[in-house]
Length: 562
Image: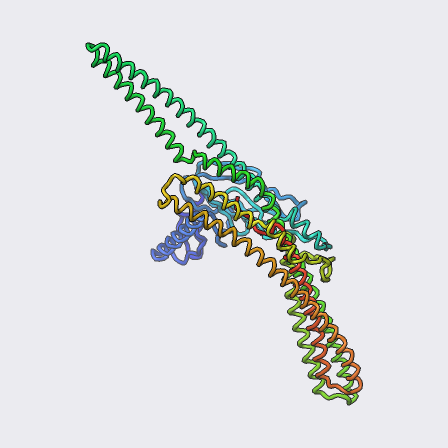
């Protein structure tokens, strides 16, 4: 410190460097000294601003072993050496020593060699360091070094997986994130059922206390009334004490009235808070309904997960199938181009035929690229749904074939749905609640707002329950019709595929004989390509329609509030 002060005080010569800011001194005149002071002030402001945000960028001029910037008394954390383990692929800085003292704050910078770190004193909680002091991937915050990696939260890739639809459904319904959410929903339903039971018990206890209080009050009032009557009789028998007896009788009567008023006020307040027999019945009804239907709610969640898994699995398989078909079409177009080019070389066909074949190859290449993009998106979506790395390679063991499930007959499906669907049970439950609420206001005038509101709520709930049955039946019959439509579309697609395949075989034969044109051959090849795509799409659509239909005749996929 004394050395620096001596350096400050000694006369400056042109060509010297200022020990504080590192700038060259051009002259010793007043103008030069003013410029030097301004440069020092600017550097001090930069350092103070950097300390405020927690990081100081040490300029290149700080090459000397001892350069200081005094900023006043503050806490100085003297950081010890940082131990870096050479056995790890990534360096993990570990602070070995920390010490806090009260002293002027200095910035200390050293020239670093390989493996060395930059030492810097810091103020308060701010970390002061140079760029070179922090290796790549390390973050310095206060006195802590944290190693961060931009890929630490990415799910690691695993070896190629073989997965069937049944295995995918098992994963999704047991260990998948949505299965975990279904379990949480079930626990919430259990908690709701227990809550209703606790409320019912609490209301029952309040009702019991109210009955006891009412009985005690009635007994006390009767006692006070009897005493008042005896005192009134004594007042008549003893006229000289009549006024006293009369006053006592009035006091007893007043006490009885006060007790009665206080008791009934307490009972009324409890009733206003919900301690009524109707509320107890409602809580018991809710408890029973929640206990009876929490498993059905869970089944509804699982059914939705199964449907989504089947859909995404079939979508991925369909995308791979479409890509395979597109590649086959490209191979066929390339073979046509090769054959047409050979015929052109021997003078059988013209250059126009070759150009048409080349155009067909270009279209086929475009179809392959589009199919590959769709396939990659479908595969990434599937991996995301199952919790894999989005780039995980999966071998789908189930191929795109028509499901073996035979759709249930429509009338049977309607009957099953009306007996099992969650929506109907929820609507009937609402009717039961509103029946209790209407019964609770029977003492009100039939024209009163309270009674009419309760009556309206019940009628509305009854209509909703009736409509729910009609809507469920419409839904089942519509889905049955859709299954039949998808099946018919699949049969038609298969027939067109057969026609296109046979047409292409005949077209090739006639083309060899020169009876058909190159354009006709290419159009027939394209027709077969489209027919193959239609069969694949129709198969996937039919399979999903059947699964949706069979799910709808059971509990369904809708949770009901408990």
